Image (tube, rainbow, N blue to C red; front, side):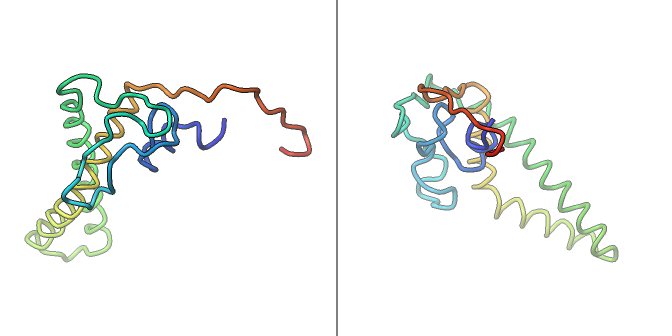
Length: 135
């Protein structure tokens, strides 16, 4: 299995869950005017991203999990690296991480949600034969 055939490639590259080639979002996550805006269809394979109204509401649960993971990561990192940090500074560092990361977390939650429900369709064509020398 090639790296490009994995869900992780689609998620980290913000690529189409169907073909892993076209862009999923209109712009990058930190373009605040278009944060979270998806194309209606894939520019390459024309797969539909908005299959029904309210489809991406379930991505809120994924976003919540990402936010909790970020908070725990910051808390553990500050506890290990800065053990004398005051509770106020800890709260400020966690809130700063959540505020600055929220556009990225929102985009990640939508692409993860889409990859759960949209299945990758490997491009048609002959399967390449790999010899022992190429492995």
